[in-house]
Length: 245
Image: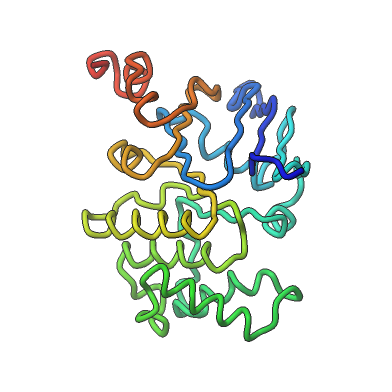
């Protein structure tokens, strides 16, 4: 029987030296929809992404994707299993064109898809991210917002059911934020699941189906946006005591 959860984290812990960054964290992400990870700086959000995607190995606990244990597997095997992620530092190849950047993402599944299939995936991904008209432009010549959408196109090009997006909307203006929102909701409508790190709580309210609140590496709450933002103690942790209204 297929599990209702696409991602299950159980007892996940990670320390660097004597600094405990993630502590006995349990979190289950249901298939479909957008779940946002929120919390103060240093809460452990990006570290959690690194543990899920194999860039770090947990000290304890398990990571399961659709019931399959992927704990500690290297990033390329995690990606092949069905997880794609973006990074705060966009990691584009500045000397390559937009098309070449997106093709590299599609080509990471080399041997599993034909060249024509990878080109088609890149074309579709650029269209969905709204950067098809920039296909022949070098990444170095793009605006910051355009680079953000190229990074998103690279993630879309991968045939992954779970997308981990690390602050993909940071620095975007109003029209770009609305465009980002529409793209993500369209991806969910197509059957993808999105796990999002975001500091802009207005965006979190608008785009999220669920919100997970982390602090000091611990999961303090997991619920709907209305449930999470109604908790005054969480507002105090995020903004300081004066914001707990």
